[in-house]
Image (cartoon, rainbow, N blue to C red):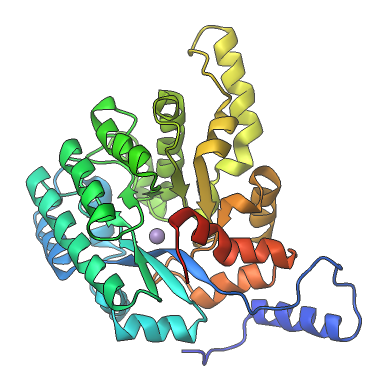
Length: 372
Ligand code: MN
């Protein structure tokens, strides 16, 4: 899988390497080693049972799930590519570990792929989440030095989801949970979902807020041009969800609650100053209630972000400037992205060894209590 044509990125990499070799202008702070332990924390799997139930929903036209229906018609349509992705999603053993070895990944923190169990009727979602967590836990127990896991939860029955989170941490040994943004068009700022946050807060485990297609109330103008998908709609949906959580006051209620956002914080680090500035205007005119802290302060106190799917150094540097390297975590988004490109984007970035070590592994070791 390493046999491929050289692209522009390879050329730039070679140019940078030869410039260093010739005593060129590499800054003193930039590291030269690429020998970091690497923990990737947004790495996907699915069970065959969940995939089969998705197929049933898609065959029925996915009523009430226009974004999922659109994915079924396009990006999920049967092809050699989707069959390979499916095979990689299902594999929690030798095939996955071989891919990790080939791409220099020491550990994956594995979670259910989008849209997970959130498109199902409540009881089915609850049962399939429990089963997926059992499957993932067994894989982690078989390969404790290579895999860790985040629980799938079905917010459709909030109290059951909270209990499942507790079981996943205390009995199954998982390290947190992952929720694929909206559930039937609803967001987790709705207080009926707060038992999930109460449990996460008490257990002191993070919740990964992962994208899916935009919620039913916003998806219409995203459906054509492919904008509902990962290039834009996913980030719009998930950043909105994150800001709804901040504005809802959930972090005042649960001070130890930590949320992980992928895809370089779904764009939020770029906008922090403007979000604060216009929030303050709305407070001044009485349009929104004043919160104990600024939106950017809640973001820095309660969110961390990952590099999944973003190989743009300027975005990485901006995120470090705004948040600090201690809030940036490496993720590859296996099996959807090029892991080599994701690893290379950190290795080749103009960062100190200390920053790279934090991003590649020590932040994750601290957040999840991992010993690799
Ligand atoms: Mn992902």
